[in-house]
Length: 270
Image (tube, rainbow, N blue to C red):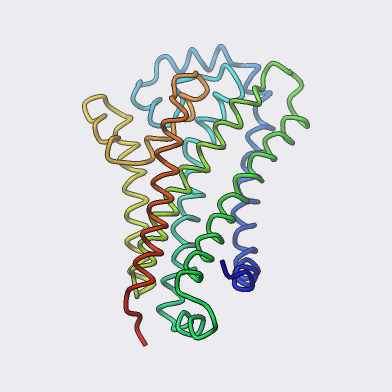
């Protein structure tokens, strides 16, 4: 890894990373702040959920009801809000780190220094990894801080399940970011890389949502990596964590590895 480049890229992109992290933390704190009032009406809310279409509940991760804090945030936050925030991040940052530099000619300047293509690409991948990890760490910490500030019921919060949800989210977006990194490593045009990565990520997300709505189209979920992150199943103990985590980690590592390998060998525009 090229450490001077890593420090420079982190300096350039840290503000953007923190904007996503603070946005995620804000929503998490907001969810925790609202939870005590939700908990007081758990029975009424669960009764209301029973009359809702089952497919709609699955689509938004509410099939676990509101019996615990983890069940609540798995649908309210991890099912949609965090997914949207980190999907945007994992499409935008890889494009800025790779395709944008190639498109603007800055990559040629970097490669004119005493370094190799492999080191440059790996360094950029580490910046992406650091950014994703930073957002998830701040999100997780904000959940614990919110719990300490707003939730008085000690039995309402199960720390292990909450941590497992966040590990699953991190690995999902490590995989999404890895695929976007691969696309940006083989593209010369920033807009094309951004468009392809965006369509890929949004397409995966939509397939997962549609597949949840009806069992007749549940097979669509097999086409998307978003189906490997099921926060409501983690809360209920139904999710096979190690299998899903392993697959997501392999996807991310292989995608980044292929991106670096192809970038080392391909022709760059002058």
